Image (cartoon, rainbow, N blue to C red; front, side, top):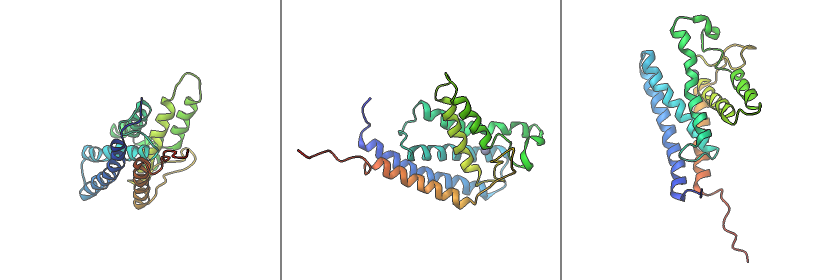
Length: 189
Ligand SMILES: [Zn+2]
């Protein structure tokens, strides 16, 4: 398959900037009122998806996600299914009253361990990346995450730090997909 046209790759950078703006807008709406859990989820999950997509684009992923990228994006959203026991009143599943233990590096390491075994293909490693990109946002929202579970409690970072990472990722996506990093044609004779 050939390289996509320059206009398409440039679109990746522009959409990354729009995605960061969308995340900020979603978070502003989320903070504007005390929403029911369902509405909070409907605001939070698209922001997770966009966060992961912007980071992947910064790393050079194509505008339309390939198979590996789709695994990453799926994990970046579906990991929140681990909250279901909490909604069924299994409060002990939360670490320090916050998020579940599966919101930790332990899950990413477990997936990487599976990825290192023969015959598993690239999916477990892609899922691990998705989990890490999910944690990137959760670190800065709500009570933080039990990042080092079972060795520690909740860890959080200020929201502006997350925004700074997103802005840097969008800037990297713009530069990477602008063609500025590609080698000029060799005109030497
Ligand atoms: Zn989460």
